[in-house]
Length: 305
Ligand code: BDR
Ligand code: CA
Image (cartoon, rainbow, N blue to C red; front, side):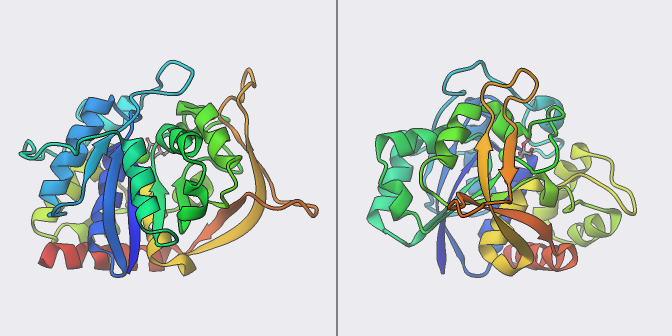
């Protein structure tokens, strides 16, 4: 079993990623930390707590973290995820409270307790991770791997240059890419190929109670047609942790633009490493058919529990 700690901002696709982690064979979810991103921290934390109960995650600790970016005003994506952060899905109010303490300390303590065993998966702005690296640089050696959903090597989504998680805190992203980690980066180039088509949605409908989360969340997230639909960006990061053969990864040197007038938050991806040590493995191709088979199988396992 691979232990995973997920830092997230639920978020429709974050919820789908957490559901995937809950059902994935071979993954053991050991912690959830939240960050302000798609919605305010109070909303993303409430959603993480509600998902812990809805998905039956047991005693997995949920710890709230940073409300906003290290240096700059907040950027939100509530126009995408709706005011509740979960589209049209309605989850019961959580009964149990968040863990005591800050997300940054949960990240550090979890990694320290099991060096080399825990894969960090970050699917929101990288504020908590940057603070963890600053507070305890040994997290880089303690983590088994760092997998992120963020950036791209071709385009942005929040603006022409920048992907949302990078734009929401470019300074934090720069710290993470400069930390010494080999960042496993699942950017828009691959995540935009993982879309919920009508066929995928039809495969979600029979999933019982889980479908009550997945279907209204998905349909609020974008228009589903025979060959297009909303992209489940964050689920790609968890799917990669579950089965790395789903994604072709290419070594690169990645820098995050923090000063550009038009390009703040852009990931500048250089595949010509020219003898320089790559600081990233960048996803360049997702096997979409196998991805959906694996994701839906994991959802099926979860639904049958
Ligand atoms: C990323 O931005 C957020 O809106 C999603 O949850 C995902 O993490 C995609 O750019
Ligand atoms: Ca997210």
